[in-house]
Image (cartoon, rainbow, N blue to C red; front, top):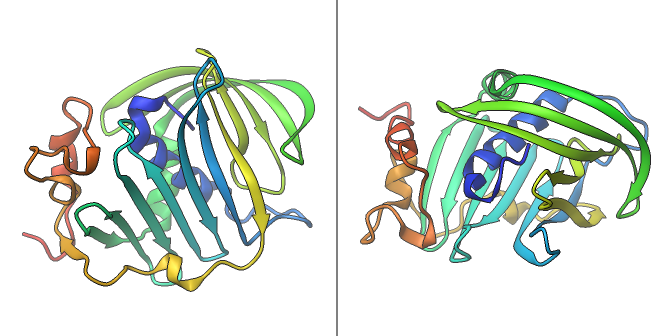
Length: 233
């Protein structure tokens, strides 16, 4: 699920698609409403990035900082309204498109080109009993392909790994997981935001697309320009 720090945007998209694939999995004690810190650690154990995730049965919010540490990006999924929003808080812009659950599920399934797993037993991580697995995977999103080897710790209570350790030693994990109701304001567009027609327009600024501290892998910008609102020309 986590391709690497230079692929933070694709990571976010894949995380969301995997959540849709996992929707409907049954577990008596499954957390349906919770918040958590999403922390990325360098191989030396130093914290590189921190994000937040807020989950309810029909709403999800993910906050991710740019790899440069400037600004952040927010993704909100509203299953109840069949909408998804991407927000740039620095420039107060947002991009909206219809939320098609089948599209997200197919994206997640289609992104994984090959996958092999090896069971490594059970281990408790941050208070959650997890199944530990070794995973080798080839993922392709928007024409970008990445091969990865990782160790994942998966809890039946959540729809995502509690911890993922990549082969370079970097780790992404959920910490401070708190069960409970989430504020409705977290899943709304704040006042003063301008609606734009595509993702590149959302991040385009005086610094030629690096507004808010964001930059895209070579070639990804052109692909993002093609993601438009249904009403766009």
